[in-house]
Image (cartoon, rainbow, N blue to C red; front, side, top):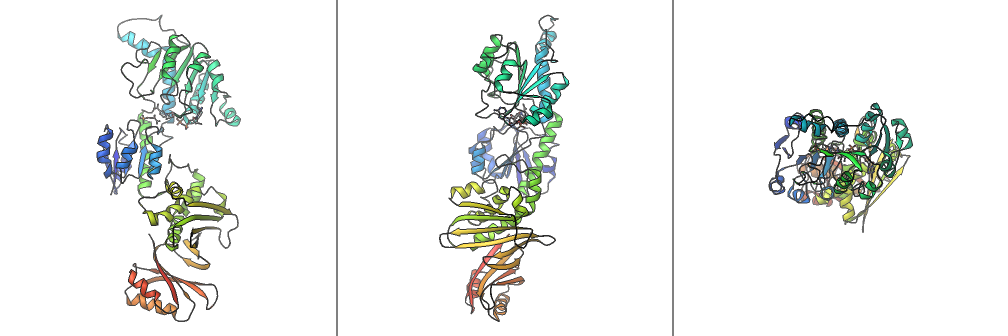
Length: 530
Ligand SMILES: NC(=O)C1=CN([C@@H]2O[C@H](COP(=O)(O)OP(=O)(O)OC[C@H]3O[C@@H](n4cnc5c(N)ncnc54)[C@H](O)[C@@H]3O)[C@@H](O)[C@H]2O)C=CC1
Ligand SMILES: O=C(O)C(=O)COP(=O)(O)O
């Protein structure tokens, strides 16, 4: 039974799928301190959070069974990603579910700051009928600078056009083509700051975006600028903004996010006549909360059940078309890695993977992660190694990983060859997906075979002599080990050969030792492929 802890307020409806899952129990405990989380996290396989819970290295160290941290939202700056990667904990987010909601909040804030709505509201409910203090401005005809043209920034740009605004966008990944399609002008931070009437930021908080709008930008800013931040506190330097507002450079600002949340009671934004605030409400709609909770729950379930998953933050994203192509090979890749790692003697120094045929046409890095996981988990334990940390762990152990592609697959439409090298040995295995038959091992070292990579296998190397198959079968049978399938591979008649036996239950060490004593039998090795 998997245990999931929900430590922030997350939509009940959204996590219903997790609650209903027969192999999962869900505990909801919002508002725990770091110490309280450290005390209980050891019981859990998954942790679901929003932006309040700070998922620290200490919490992850205590989370001995923790496989995944699911963020029901976009920003993962509250999660120590480096620590998660090192510990093989997958971090996923729900990047699409709150885009429109946050975009709409940005508009609510932009309109509110343009028309002084919160300030006017306060006076009106306080009994004053003050119409002259709140002269606003129109959005129509104004230049809106959008810093960060990702999901939310692009939606803001689309809607701003309907208000008759001229949009200038800046994003290091914005192409002329996309800008043209969106009907916006490609710009720079400097141009936006000098020319825009409104400015809104939609970037993540990174070392590069931290204080990207600070004193030097306020010094050259167009007088009367109105600024919205519904992205992350710290993108705009808070103190510099207050100065600029006091100097009349900034006419108004609307902030949903703060450098420290919640802000201290004496934070200069609170009670500033030109600055309006909301308590990080950008994603807080019924719809968005349901969306992100559904998305994150589905992926957490996939991870717990060891199925392919989307939206991992601490490993490179896999485009859907690539995932569709690679997904059928993940199991085979891992089994090949595991198989060959059970053959090799000595510490593995190099894992060399060759992809052939249709596999050579896509980015196979995600598949390589599964293969390396298969290789390493035999020694490090399946619990320790997963697709997030497998490459990282290999590097830490100075295992060199070499990947090559060849467009022509010898006899198959696709194949994966994994070669392991140690100081004293080199071992090879090749596998393929046979249409209609599934995964197959088709080569072991220099021998051609046809073996389903599953269950208990016994690999025997022997001299190709009459009677040897019978004597192996008799010995196993006498010891109660039933043979489900057998494959023999040989180079030349009477030469070196191998035998791969699929047996219904594992053979004991003693039995394997007895096998080796049979005449003309050189080596026998049990291989477990579960
Ligand atoms: N207030 C709230 O409740 C919410 C806040 N957010 C925040 O909004 C922000 C944007 O979210 P999305 O649009 O979903 O993310 P996204 O990843 O789709 O877009 C971010 C964009 O910022 C761009 N960018 C990165 N560095 C930049 C730089 N130095 N200058 C200009 N652009 C840069 C990226 O290229 C990317 O296109 C994130 O910080 C997210 O955490 C998201 C949802 C709710
Ligand atoms: O998704 C994001 O990045 C957000 O900032 C939303 O945060 P929240 O889930 O509302 O705490």
